[in-house]
Structures are given as structure tokens and as C-alpha cells.
Length: 507
Ligand SMILES: *[C@@H]1O[C@H](CO)[C@@H](O)[C@H](O)[C@H]1NC(C)=O
Ligand SMILES: *[C@@H]1O[C@H](CO)[C@@H](O)[C@H](O)[C@H]1NC(C)=O
Ligand SMILES: [Zn+2]
Image (cartoon, rainbow, N blue to C red; front, side):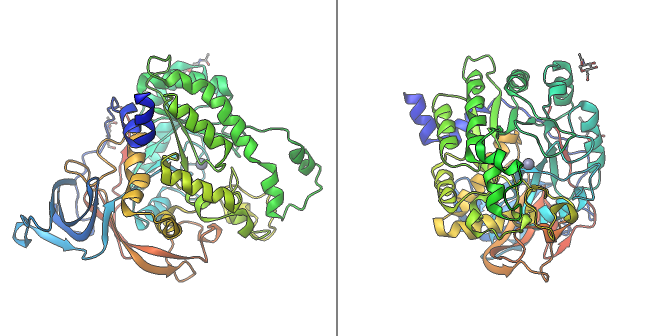
């Protein structure tokens, strides 16, 4: 009883506890900051501001950075620091926050770099205050499902990433029952695995069933790394059959929405919670963790997750800014920029997602940035059933969460929790996720009050800005500067000359 209460009241603590045993070592390579990596020519300096977001709250003061790490944090009133001790960058009223960690992005590199690619994707990330992202194992080619294919990823990232990048590996039928294959992938540094319970949208990445997932969890238990699951299970519902027969207009958003009802998410999660029992203390997969990606259904699916959590299963769930910003009623017919799966549902569902996030039942946010070529989005044709499913959003996740969160009283501390602290714990990134002494100096500086129009005059670093559902909207929260391990990698529409992000590998 006591345990259940603690779990409910302190979801973060519970999440932390299940991962305390992790010991990931990151490969920073031997590169030290140098003038190509940083727009600031100092190895030791202070960042000062009236609003610094720390795990202990928002303070006015300064943070000292030395050789890529945070070495001192002082409050204004304890003025132990002054300009004599080193260079001070004073950001005044701008917010100094831990850099965002996006644990779910598709950069499609190698193999489909014309969809996004490491350089444009990580430049967009840096411009949006993201300091680390974890790349998904599919939409690149070949898919990342073996030691060899992970090596191709790491090779492709070399000197082409502007922020730090970790990698999920793929759990697919081909490797699920082959523990030496999975172990090879995990030994090579995959931070965890990802699988689909429905067709992934790309033939090179086949779906798994619950037996594959159970097997995957048992291997992951030894490594204490998570399994991320796309939880939709195809149900041959009547509405689905109807559409197959072609009776509905494919340009109507409602037609698409009907093809992927909430019952698909619910059915998948119902199966998943039969195997997450294994992750409980003393269970056969203790040490493994199951994380449900991009939840859209805020009703029955969420109830199942809550129940599993309270029973002691090691399970968490994320949602994405597009489910919190948009609702089905607002999506114009033919506007396939908004197609993603699971789909964006109605506004009542959206309100309940916000409620769950604010109450801590949804643990974390991710972008699920999933771009493609404009021609595959079928923007002219507007056929929702044939267009590529995926929302392009990476550069905008901070201002979107902030702008749409205003109505719900979202705080800076909550942003740091959803976008930095919890993703760091889930991905096992020990020295990231908070402005704390000893951590990497991964920092986003931004002005929450500054409004901007996302129009043609706005500099978007994504490869295909036209396919982003956010183009045309008005947002508030402009990024001023982004530091990755102490390197000033972005400031006011300028990136550092060299791409000095490093691959993050688990060990
Ligand atoms: C770390 O990265 C460097 C440079 O990319 C590489 O030479 C080295 O082998 C890596 N070390 C590990 C343990 O992966
Ligand atoms: C299992 O994977 C290993 C390493 O990838 C491979 O050499 C072996 O042939 C696979 N075994 C089976 C039965 O597919
Ligand atoms: Zn995805």
C-alpha cells in the first residue's frame, strides 16, 4: 500500500528508482571545445540570468562552466562570482534551462538523408534549444537492427551532428528470438530497443507481436535498458472495412481518423500490460522497462497504463506536442501535414491528455519528428489515406509546448521535467537533463515572452519546412542560444562552424 501511494504521488521518484542501477557511459570522444565547435572562445566562463531553472527551482544567479561541465551554481544573493573570475555572458531576464532531450526523432540517416539527415536535423534541434536527441531505428536505410547497422549510423553521424545523438535499436521478428543478435546490438551501444505492434509504415521495419516483445524485455532486463513500443493493434472494426471498400472521401480528415480508432491503442496496451508484469520487482524481466511512445488516446488506454503503474510494473508513457496543440475538428480537409499515427483526435481527448500530463500520468514528451519528402506528403492531392504519416516539428517543440501550455498554467519547471529530466532518466543519460554541478553544460537560453510568426520569413533549418504542421502559426518562446557540453553551438540564426555533437553509446 505504501509503495503504491509513493508511486502515485511521486512518479518521478519512482521512475528514477527503477533506473538507479543504470550505468551508461557516453563516448565524448577526445574532442575538447575548440573554436570551430563553439561560437564562444572560452573554456571557462559564467552564464548569468535572472531565471535559471534548476532542480531546486528557478533562481537568479549564475552558472560556471569549465571544460564542458557545470562546476558552480550560485544565487544572486551569494555573489561569489564576478567578472574577474572569468568571462560572464549575462542573459538578463532570458530563461536559462537544461537543454531539451528529444528521445524520439527520425533523422532518416543514412539511406534516406534526403528526408531529413543528421546535419539539417541537428541544426534545427540546436536552433530549438534541443541539446540531445535519440534517433529512431527506422526510416533510415538499412534499419538499425543489428550491430552492423548501428555502426553505419554512428559512422554517418561522424562530424555531421551539431548536438549529441543517441540511438535506439530495432526489435523485429528477425532478431527477437536471437539473443546473440540483440546482445550484439546492445553491446554496440544502442540505448534500448523500439518495436511496432502494427505496420510501421515502411517495409524495411516489420512489426512484432507480443511474444517478440516478451522476449525482447527478457534480454533488456540484463542490460537495464528500455523497450519503446508503438502501441496500436489493428482491429478489423467495421469502420476500417468500410474504408477499404473506398466509400469515403480520402481528402476528409474524418475518413483517416476512422481508420485508426482509440480501440487500436487500447487493444495494444491491453496486450502490453500482460507482459509488463514481468518487469516488477522479483519478476522474470526485472530491470527491463517498457515505454509507450506517442500516446494519443487519453481514455481507456491511459487507464490501463495507470493500473499497471500502480501494480508496480516498470512502465512509462509519452505524448507529443502535436497531440497537445491540435484537434481533429481544426484539421482542414486535404491538409496532410497533420497526418500521423496514432492520429490527432478530438478536442475533448486533447483536454484529457493535458490533464494526464499535468497530473503526472503521462511521464514525458517527445517530438516524434517524422519527416519525409514533400511529394510523399501529397500536399496537392490531399489524400489522407495515401500520404506519409508523420509530423515534422523538431525545431518548434519548445515554443509549441510553452505556447499551447499557457492556458494550463505550465511552468518552466514542468518544461524542464518533461523535456529534460525525465527523458534523460529514461534514456539512461547520466550527466544530462538538469542544470546541476557535475553535469554536462547542455543549456538552452530562450525568451518565453517573445512572439513570432512561423512564416516564410522565419529561418527554419529543417530540410523540408513546407511539410511542417506548425508553419503558419504564431508562437511564443524564442531560442537565443544553445550550449552543448559547454560549446555555444547556436546563437541568433548562426551555428558553430563545425558539427561537434557526439554519438552517445551505452555500455
Ligand atoms: C569513442 O569515439 C571515438 C571517436 O569517434 C572512437 O575512436 C572510439 O573508438 C569510441 N570509443 C568507444 C568506447 O566506443
Ligand atoms: C542470430 O544472430 C547471429 C548474429 O547476428 C547470426 O550470426 C545467427 O545466424 C543468427 N541465428 C539464427 C538462428 O538466425
Ligand atoms: Zn516515431
